[in-house]
Amino acid sequence: MAITTHVTTAHTRMIKLDIREITRRLNGALGATLVASLSGSKDAKLPYRWAKADGPAPKNEAMRRLQFAYEQWTMLAEAEGEHVARAWFIGANPWLGYDTPVTAIREDRFKDVATAAQAVIDDSFSG
Image (cartoon, rainbow, N blue to C red; front, side, top):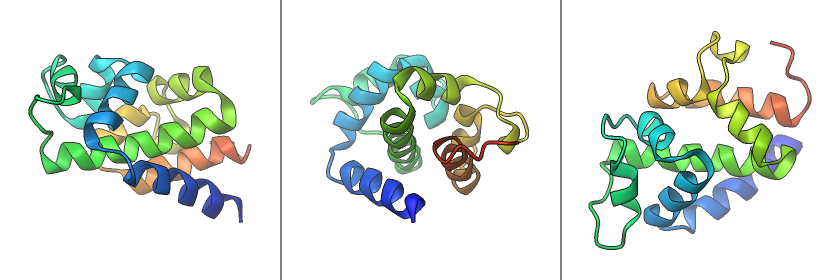
């Protein structure tokens, strides 16, 4: 089943990475402002500090959101390309009640976000 393969591969890669590396990669892909937003941080510069070896570590709830976001980013970027993945993260999404995935991740709606991402990958995105 395609969902199992995509999710398992992305999850396996994500758990092998340090949270600082995950944050660095998300900062590079989405920008620190979006990373701060999806993590629940009100400080747009905090993701830069999280990415530094000597910087503070994200709190558990932020770490969980960052890990999940990176997993979704990896699946989408590999299947559809980075441009599509970035547009998906910031665009209104009918699978999420027209919220953006960034907002839904911040609200811990992981199952809904994963379903919306998989719909793009499977070309079943009909809203």
